[in-house]
Image 1 (cartoon, rainbow, N blue to C red):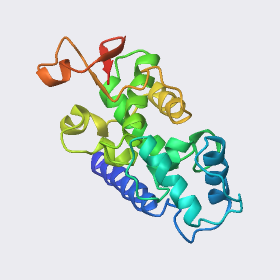
Image 2 (cartoon, rainbow, N blue to C red):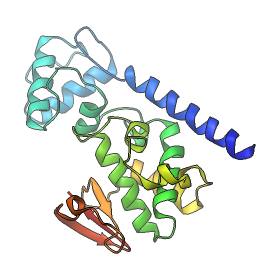
Image 3 (cartoon, rainbow, N blue to C red):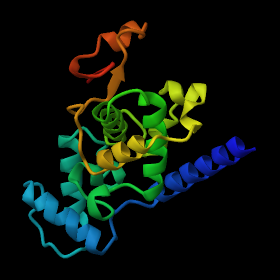
Image 4 (tube, one colour):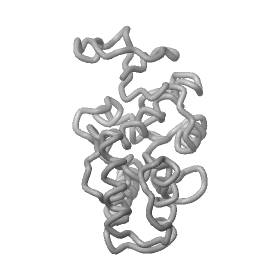
Amino acid sequence: MKRNLKIIIIAFLCICTLALSVNAVSKIGSVGDEVTSIQKKLFSLGFYSGNIDGIYGSKTKNAVIAFQKANGLVADGIAGKKTLAALGIGGSGNNAGFYSSDLEILAHIISGEARGESYLGQLAVGAVILNRVVHPSFPDTVAGVIFQRGAFTAVSDGQFYMDPTDSSYKAASAALSGIDPSGGAIYYYNPKTATNKWIRSRKIITTIGSHVFCE
């Protein structure tokens, strides 16, 4: 009964995260502080030369499109979560661009996937999840990445639903703050147990504990 209740709570958090992410966009007609931040960031990067007025007009849209093209994102002129994350904008504090429920489910997947690893190894696994969120080949939410079909063994075998370790929560918080010991990896595997030839063909970035982290 306790296990079923925990699964329901986690599922609810994931649904809330996905629902919130739908509205986390700035586009033509948007106004406010987020638009101002977008304009300032694009200006500093050389993509925008218009007025910094907090109004999302055609010049801002065109600058966003140029930035998206330069960063391998979908060039739709909408500053959604992936674009905001690439710009380093969104939310508040160190966890910019993410939601409070992300910490919980990120801790669960870190614990399920890397329970026996060092703190650095757990942090690297969390970083891979977040690197996928901003990568154009993966879903653009933490929940979407974690529950992508066949992506993580811990989800398939149920270890995701076990109580996370304290170190997993610490690693999740650090990963959300932007710390990435994986070097930008979007994949990892255990070379002693991995049988998939494709994953072994990926370019290796670093090795931490039992896991190899790669592009």
